[in-house]
Image (cartoon, rainbow, N blue to C red; front, side, top):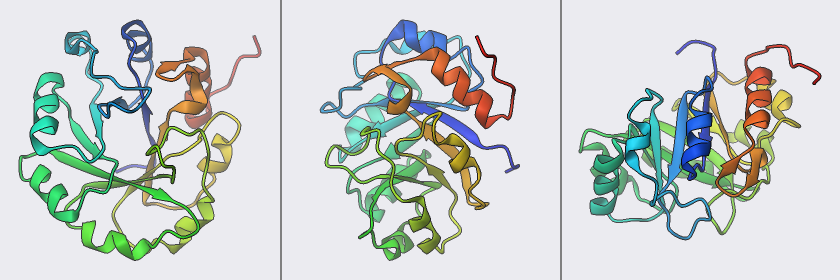
Length: 214
């Protein structure tokens, strides 16, 4: 993978908002299929994605394999992101179905990075988020220096409270394993509804483009 960071915008559920987002140069769109989330996307019409080529990431939290497969087929999901307590064996079961698997972990000062060892062979990518009881979407960051304890080779996305105010700090991280950024709640008007102007500003910061003063 080249030095260009991938950008995933997650937590989309409004059809008009989704259409506006997909006009922008993002690399992934994230749809949350965890019913307890205020960003639950289960009622979105899958056909709205037909005219776009942006890869779709489905986010699941401790859900049955059958439900994951059903959503994957209905939405033609390109990636399955497991954001709960899924075991390495569960990740392998999903991967055995020919699917790309990302495994998310909530990080805080007590996180044991050795837990990742048993996942390295069964997932394609890690996602490091801020540890919360609600499995993400808090708008809070964790101490990114904790990632200095990660000694594996599996690439990862950085997530958790990333917005225009701290993007530059995120971009300054010198870690070749960090292959992308996951943007969500810091760019929202309401849960599941993104501020498209703010997303555009974030993308310009990430892509080192000038930002207009209007």
